[in-house]
Image (cartoon, rainbow, N blue to C red; front, top):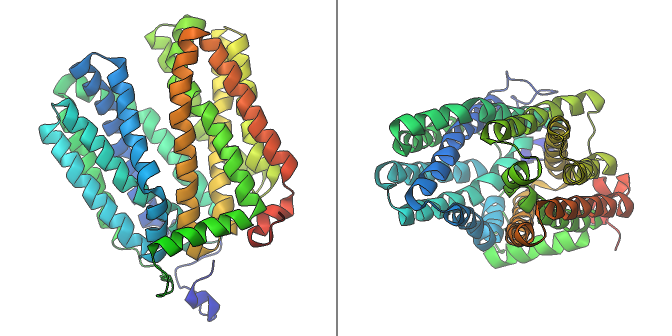
Length: 415
């Protein structure tokens, strides 16, 4: 987890104790991620509206999600090996430039459904390489406050989405989807230019190892760790819940809460507010998040919220519950990222993050399919009862199987 410079006793000149925006590398990474997230918001809103306009079918909109998930399942393990072998900044810059090209093509030719699906697939394929690289490189630029770095990146993303999603909708309504896709393309170019100026140490994988060997080594490391094995089980169970409940929130609002489109937007706003506030609350409680209660406790909170949403139909209660759900989602994400960045060695970090991306997206895909069937046959409340129960199971698995020591010594985990 330490670089060659650190092992030789030479401190990196730009590393400071604690998170500091005076640190050039972190400032550049933060600005790059923020610019990219702004573009993503315009892209997501534009794609949903455009696909529905072209097809008039909710199923076609759902198919877009499938095209975004498939590349994660197909390329995730390879991407993790690449991230641990190649210079991570170069991987991120290359992914940004490729995504800029895809977004540009979409801006010009995105009036056909097959072009949109191909673009969604391609964009996701390059993101599969970007995300584990970004998560893996953060400890090298964040100073000693990984929790603070993850918190500010997460909260900025949420605030950006809340602020820009309505603007994106207005833009698409007034000028079509093309300008929104163009903004996304520009955001990737801005991100790439910022990232290109970051210099971090690179420890390449030993020359004798090759891609398949890297992947096998990653699996062996995961199997040897009680913490990582347990986290995989928890993530898989939670994804089986979150995929359906997130995708079908609009159905819950209409069929169970009896809300119109306007008040559905308020529900989404409540989630966003909770998600934006969560990391700041977490930092007030602790600076050490590598504890089972903080890693797995958010699943418990989200499970209880899902059960309450299924049991009651109060709009005010739903607002409070979804704000709490947002807090659970954001604090869970920040503790998950920070803990893995802390305990996983640098030379395996890319493969570990990529593995969990595959686990999450596999469960999410299955959840969306099963959830849609259950909603139509048993009712939307049944989906949320089941989703809440799965989250409670996930939390129980994590809280009962692990002690704090397991989170700090992944290589020495017990069988």
